[in-house]
Amino acid sequence: MSKDLSHQRLELTDDDVRRMYRLMLTARAVDERALVLVRQGKTQFTVGGQGHEAAQVGAAWTLRPGVDWVLPYYRDTALVLTLGISTYEIFLGEFAKADDPGSGGRQMPRHWSYPRLRIITASSVVATQLPHAVGCALAARLAGEDAVAFVSFGDGAVSKGDFHEALSFAGIHRLPVVFFCENNYYAISVPFSQQSPVASVADRASAYGFPGVSVDGNDPLAVYEVTRKAVQRARQGQGPTLIEARTYRLGPHTSNDDDRRYRSRAEVEEWHAKDPLRRFGDYLISNGLLSETEAQEWQKQTHDEVAEAANRASMAPELTPDVACRFVYAEEDGR
Ligand SMILES: Cc1ncc(C[n+]2csc(CCOP(=O)(O)OP(=O)(O)O)c2C)c(N)n1
Image (tube, rainbow, N blue to C red; front, side):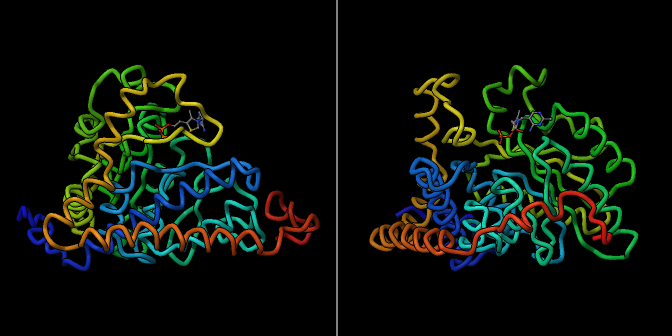
């Protein structure tokens, strides 16, 4: 049995890492179920984060839900599950039900918005959440709060003007922001090498006067370590950090995408061999923190729990036509 107890060095308990793994399994089960529902014609569209689970759980573990401002992007299922959104709530969004807490069924799925958790909704327009996060950080500072703003985005976002404006402003004012790039090397079909003249996202931070760090995004403990440091820096008034978590999207961009048209199967297989679920499961098992039997039971339990949540959400009340257009345009009574 190997004795590589990295989590103890990071002051994470055995229970912490078990819960992290369980969340990763749950997120994967949500994505798999959601794709099945689209294929069955029961929902219209979905977007999954298969492969990103380690990066997201590791990062989310450093945040204080309801205190820190969180501006996630559509791929962040494991991140929001870690912060406290339930699988049932996610499926209310998948089915565009009236009780969907994100938008009451008006937004695309996974465009998270949960005021109680200080999760701020993002536009579908890539990178717009970055300047919003900087605004949250500035507001927190002006309000005298010690809240940190955490914003996540894909590698495609770093080619947008919003990215540069956000990092520049945050750098000048040393704002408490953590910029978290989930670099999966593709912006739909465009490989990272064709949209960035430099190989590392993290290197860009030096142009704005704060640290940038690249980390293995398929290792939740490595991500936890660098994000914790970035959050501490932000809280202590030392300013922003740019983190680049290197990972891979194991599935298509969305349910509308056919990634066979732009990625070789050999490349995808290579990354399947580095699947963060398998890696972290092996870590737990080889260190005696989870038994093989328990691992199999957890697989089944998470799938069953997710199927039950999806089923319950499918039966929730529909959004009715008389209210469907509310909150889109200004209303006569000023609401
Ligand atoms: C400004 C803008 N351009 C194009 C799109 C269409 N679009 C949606 S997602 C996406 C790819 C984004 O890739 P990335 O930021 O790397 O995140 P990933 O989906 O790979 O996690 C694109 C081009 C958009 N939503 N907004």
